[in-house]
Image 1: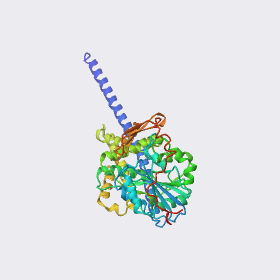
Image 2 (image 1 turned 90 degrees about the vertical axis):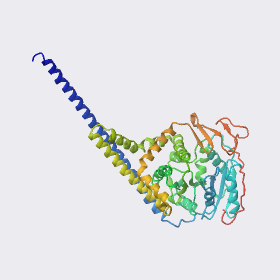
Image 3 (image 1 turned 30 degrees about the horizontal axis):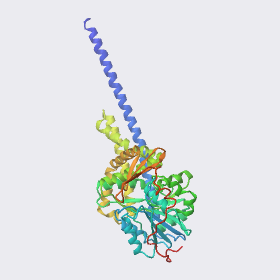
Image 4 (image 1 turned 90 degrees about the horizontal axis):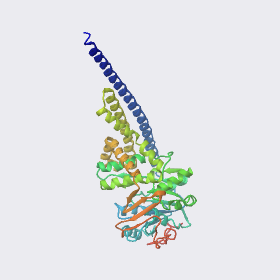
Length: 472
């Protein structure tokens, strides 16, 4: 018996050590469960706040859209529309600008080159609508800024004295007949520094690819309302000529990669308000391929990263916090050690899924407010179901693309590649089907291009004589 006592002592000590390890593991698992539950509660709070904001957007949009009659502003408006290439529904979209229910306005289309295929469409529309004063500006190639920015700087080089309002629109937007009157009427009554609309992607088939861009875009649209800190969207926004010149917007555009976010940054720094007008939300066709869709989403995050980096950081890592917690909960529910961990993970993931579904319901309700007839069609209904069931997966795609965009310093946009160099300088590489390939750095200009944006002659094509509709 005495000879066996050391072995018994060793066995008792080993048992105590094993029990201690099991106890420590249990305590560790309990700590993980508590941490997961706490993260889930924070994610739930975030989603409740986002759902409340989505509800406010829906309420605000429904109330504003019930206002059928917008008063007629009394000032001349100049609508500037940069164009490039034959994009989807181009002629139909541009024709909408000629059918505006506004007493005094003129259109100014701007392209990089007369070789642009959009020129023939613009000239045909100008000839078909002699009652609207319209002109075409050829801006030339950009050298140290985005081509769209260069086009806008060329188009605003000279502004007629009688113009009171400046309106900017994209060629992929499809405006309603009351679009211009609603935009400027809101600008007058709100006395904001600028009024903006936004886009809503309209599906044609209701595929998952369309759901990705429609859901991500719709999530941002729902953040806009009457009292929120809205950003300017370049596809539809307006300001007064006085504000445009006083704020130095044209000078602020020089050498920049983006137009609307630069304006938004300028207004934020001045503490000036941007008003959102739901009647100026415009329908935009979804992209026809997965590659185009990914490139579009990636480009949006890239521009935000390099123009307003603090907003990009907040949007990427705070705005997507609930998505990260959701996948952590799913991982714990599937691979967790112990019933407590699996239950905590399942509870966190389930609550986030349900709250995200509620947000998707508000997006669907908003789409029905904006597009009451289109929303009943099968593609829209399929999009709604994709948004409800797969929104967290869609959000994950957005998160990955946002992080990827933040790590890159170049982006391709309509056949042109832009490189962001140190100090924020933009290097432009033209390689589009509209002309021969041409690369030029931000500080290497050809003699022909030097100072082009300051002395650009406004090459006007098809300008019509003033009529009572277009006179100041």
